[in-house]
Image (cartoon, rainbow, N blue to C red):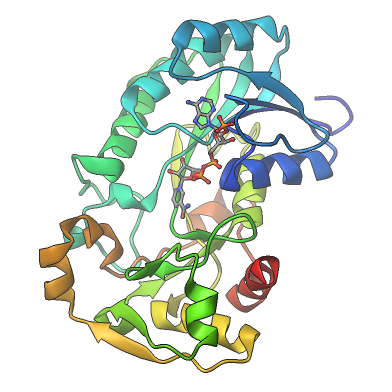
Length: 302
Ligand SMILES: NC(=O)c1ccc[n+]([C@@H]2O[C@H](COP(=O)([O-])OP(=O)(O)OC[C@H]3O[C@@H](n4cnc5c(N)ncnc54)[C@H](OP(=O)(O)O)[C@@H]3O)[C@@H](O)[C@H]2O)c1
């Protein structure tokens, strides 16, 4: 660290979450290196390494060849145990603190508590969420030497750079704005009654940065959510308010949705969290009100 300026490595760095993180870190004056396959445009003002993380030799060569030590690394694209193993094998030599981005889909939706504590031990054991939990377990079992690590489990992440929509049947729906403007009803599972606590992408970025060097957050796993708990249907109503259009909702029954789309199960539960563990650890607590964040998100798409 030089005069408060951190040296930061982002695995990913040009997509939605990782690109937002790269820009927030850059704008805060930090020295940012990203690693991608070079398929997407690179944010300005960052150092870009090119490697496919699935090609272990090429990835190791890119990291080692950079000839740098980083205060913080954020793995934005770890989806399988082998990705987390790559982190714990390669990064302790060159990184002081690793943040791994997991997901709140690690939890078994049938065994949630409200709010859901990070310590709830009921996890999925397959699919996207189960594999993210495998990654967390790799970290928990690893000897990472002097490298600290922290896991963030975001819920629905929103903000410029992504599509709108937090619940089936309008999840990341690129036609959502047109549908609302045309006055067509939205079909939401359970009528959109499930509670959510969406996190604005820049808040998640600031939260990840705040973990750097935080001894309390070492080996910590945190649920990462926004400041507002809302019914999912309210999320869509706010979008309608930004557009100046009324939103009408038709209900898809939950049992019918689950029969046809068992993969939707992790969406079909209340996803709410207590932010006190973040506060008590001295981490940057997400604070963008959903109304303000969605206003910016909608405006970025119209
Ligand atoms: N979106 C949500 O609501 C949500 C909720 C909870 C958790 N999460 C988690 O948030 C994280 C970020 O999600 P995201 O979808 O926004 O992705 P992202 O961070 O934008 O990741 C994509 C980036 O990774 C690069 N990339 C992809 N495959 C690569 C590879 N094999 N090797 C090197 N670079 C590669 C891409 O660039 P190139 O294509 O140029 O390589 C791009 O820069 C994920 O871990 C996800 O599980 C998301």
